[in-house]
Every structure is written in structure tokens, then in C-alpha cells.
Length: 248
Ligand SMILES: Nc1ncnc2c1ncn2[C@@H]1O[C@H](COP(=O)(O)OP(=O)(O)OP(=O)(O)O)[C@@H](O)[C@H]1O
Image 1 (cartoon, rainbow, N blue to C red):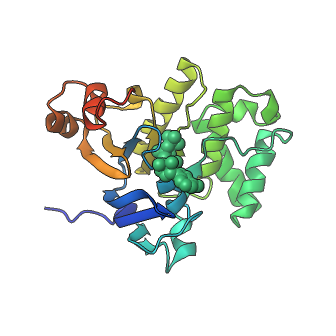
Image 2 (tube, rainbow, N blue to C red; image 1 turned 120 degrees about the vertical axis):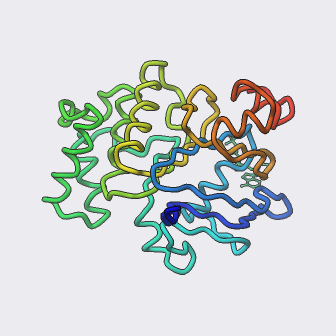
């Protein structure tokens, strides 16, 4: 058997508390290149806390996080260089053009102008946004703004992409386009994705599913494995079963 590649994200016995309130309790899981993992959890499950720890907004000395083999605590710069993120709230500059937003971000990452031009063209073409590159972000609809944010998160060629509910507030066609685009990207480039979502219908059959509830992992596996574990025939029912009657 071929040895598995290094995990893009390796979380080991990770815990975190806000004062006396435990938000994450001994989380361990891995995501490998070319895998899309949907992180499902009801309100308060701990999704935002987990993302804050992976992006190092918060720090935990209780457990370990490694990105592509780099320890987030000891090799922070190398680890974070492997990470791209799209936050729930847009962080684009509304009054700059699509291109200027992307050049600005590339400069922050130390990418040369020439290299940035190549990367920006590649990502905007892939997202069908190249034609709109001179438009101000303010003129774009929500779905197109999201695409620009995804392009931006990919400019420095990360190996792990974190998506924090990227389709919230979008209409169905825009949502479907983003879900399809991200899955295509995973298939084509071997990117690893951790996608926090409330929307069960964003799960594809070959995705991995991680169900978080009250700071603990309730299930972690392929869609089929989670259905088997819960004895259900749909991921919606499985989620309900695992989170004990919490409304989806
Ligand atoms: N700053 C904070 N101070 C105290 N407790 C907090 C703080 N932030 C989150 N919590 C608590 O930690 C737990 C996990 O919250 P977290 O925001 O990570 O969940 P979530 O899954 O992202 O929820 P949502 O889907 O509502 O954003 C919850 O019980 C929450 O009340």
C-alpha cells in the first residue's frame, strides 16, 4: 500500500475554553490533499473557535495543530503560508476594482507583481470573473464577490482552504456555482478544504463529513460511513440523530 501523503491539516487532542466554558474538547482529525471536509454543527458547536485556532487568532497550549507537517506553534510562518481562508463577512475593499483588491493582497503576501499578474489571471479565469476584473467590488453581486474572495484566498497557492459558511446569504444558483467550483478545484488541484456549513445540501457524495456538537466530534468519515454509523439514509437525518433533535 502507498504511504499516505502528509496531512494538509492535522489536529491532535485540541481543546479550548473561554474561561470556565469549554468550547472544544479533545478534537483530533486530519484532512489530506484532494479531500473536501464539510464541518457541520449547530450554533455554538465550536466551529468558529476551531477556525480561530487554525488561523491563530486564538492560541491553545492544549493539543496540536499542524499544516502540511508544520507545527502551527513552533513554525508559525511556514504553517500559515499553507493556509488560505474565506471569512464569513466580506473583507474586500468595496471601492477598489477586483484587480486592485487582488494585487493588494498579493503584495501583502510578498508575491511579485509579475507572478501576481499570472496568478490573478489564472484564478479569475477559473472562476469566470476575468471579464469583470476592472469593476469595483461594490458593483458585483454577492455571489461574484464571494468568487473574488476565493480567488484572493488562492493567490499564494495554499494547500488548505478554510471556508467559513461562504454561501450564507446567496441565492440558490450563486450558491450552487460556488459549491461546484470548490469541488472542481479540489478534484483538479489536490487542494484540501475545510468548509464550515449549516447547509446540509452542500455535501457531495465523495466529501468527508465532520459533525461537531458541543465541542466534540460526533462523527468523522465519508458520507456513507456517517450514514452507516447513524443507520440513516440521508445526511440531514444523520445530522439530526447526532445532534439530538437540534433543528437543522
Ligand atoms: N468570546 C467568547 N466568550 C465566551 N464563550 C464563547 C465565546 N465565543 C464562543 N463562546 C462559546 O463557545 C462555544 C462555541 O462557540 P463557537 O462560536 O465556536 O460555535 P459555532 O459552532 O461557531 O457557532 P455558530 O454557528 O453560532 O457561529 C459556545 O458555547 C459559545 O457560547
